[in-house]
Amino acid sequence: MNRSILLACALLAGAVSANALAAQSSSQTRMAECSAQNKGKKGEEYKAAQKACLSAKPAAATTPQERMKSCNADASAKKLAGDARKTFMSSCLKKS
Image (cartoon, rainbow, N blue to C red; front, side, top):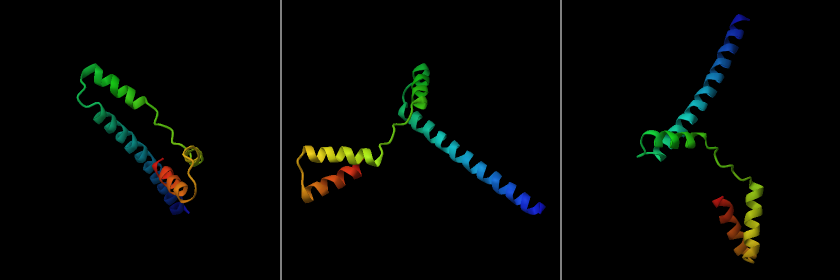
């Protein structure tokens, strides 16, 4: 019984540390991206640019329904029908 409890605790600790590592690596990635974006800036200008970059919220991804609605509107505006519409819709949805 004690072994199973110890095993469960070890597995739980491993899962928690894996989540912590994933969060850390994403923040490190974000820091590297911002640093590369602000390369060449110095002093206060660099600090301000880094702060703005790191605190910026990532752009919200559009939902598949929003993409479909937008592509449908574009296809209708271009008065596409049949195979031309299918081709346009396919390429439009892949872009988004």
